Length: 72
Image 1 (cartoon, rainbow, N blue to C red):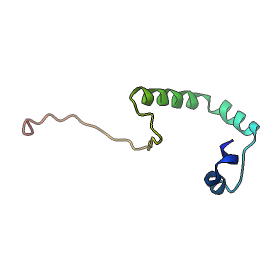
Image 2 (cartoon, helix red, strand yellow):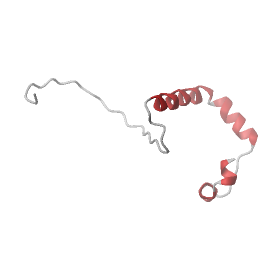
Image 3 (tube, helix red, strand yellow):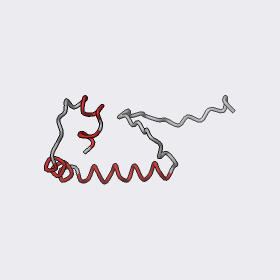
Image 4 (cartoon, helix red, strand yellow):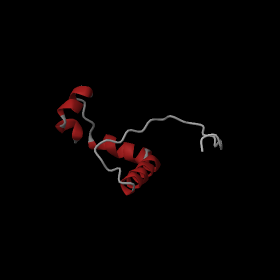
């Protein structure tokens, strides 16, 4: 488990390490979300974005299409 190997993570979680039962309950309760994130990861790899870091925030933007002939 990463919480037992990664020293930085151990410091962040104050050496709390979940057991296998915790992971099983999490996987069961979040099955749909895990499938969605797996699809997202495969999508980003298909775009060539399989680097070390991918940051996603929850920003919602309203987009409007305005055709302006002044810019052309």
